[in-house]
Amino acid sequence: MTGFILRRLLLLPFVALGVSVLIFSLLQFLTPAMRASLYIHDPKQLNALPDIIRKYHLDQPAYVQYWDWLTQVAHGDLGWSETAREPVADAIRGYFPATLELGVYSFACILALGIWLGTQSAVHKDRLLDHISRYTSISGASLPTFVWGLLLLMVFYGHFGWFPPDRLSLAAGLFVRAPGFHPYTGLITIDALLNGQWWIFWDALRHLILPVATLTYFLTAVLVRITRSSMLETLRTDYVRTARAKGLAQRTVVDKHARRNALIPVITLAGLLFVGLLSGVVITETVFNYPG
Image (cartoon, rainbow, N blue to C red):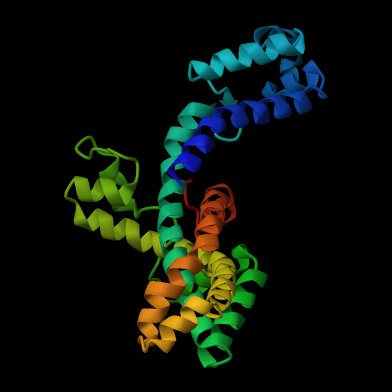
């Protein structure tokens, strides 16, 4: 397993390079003027188009453009973000910690709930818990995330006023931006604990509850189905039957024999889910006004 992971890590730079070449090649179908026009926000600035083309070497051959871009990336210059209205590197430093924090908390809930529900659903096959788990999974996979998020927002914030949107309350936000608060990691809950500010921690956690619940409900459905299927297959194997024939308790059979082997495909899927979670969380962030 260690050798496999090391080989994958060694291949990672080449994969990233190949993806960058592919995307850069697709962009070459756009003319230099079309690409440079992204930096024009006023028709009166159209006369600056040739200067922009020369500045970014868009009139040079493709390999020269790519080498120039690669050199800039190596020096930490990732370009300009029109959406954030700031350099891409600064936008990543400013917004990615919030997305990572939301993703980590959501992933922990998805993993714990998905594996537990999938296991119990397989052990109690065709019983009440199994039916509830399957119906919940189907509804979770069928309902769009923004619909579920809006429902939670209307009930728990609009009606009860319990869990507000955004990342922090106004008072907590002002305190975090004050000179005395040290943002060690960019993750508010972790930084609050490192600064000894428990009220900031609870405030940030309260704002995380609804977006985490939205993502958990949506993605747990996938993990439950895979865990249940893998557990059912494992429970039919000979070594599980042998363990039961020896008189081992049901809990011991499930926890120490069946689930360990059933989790192999689940862990593989969980890695893909985490990557997809970080890249696909934008809709949930928009619904809850979460600055990621």
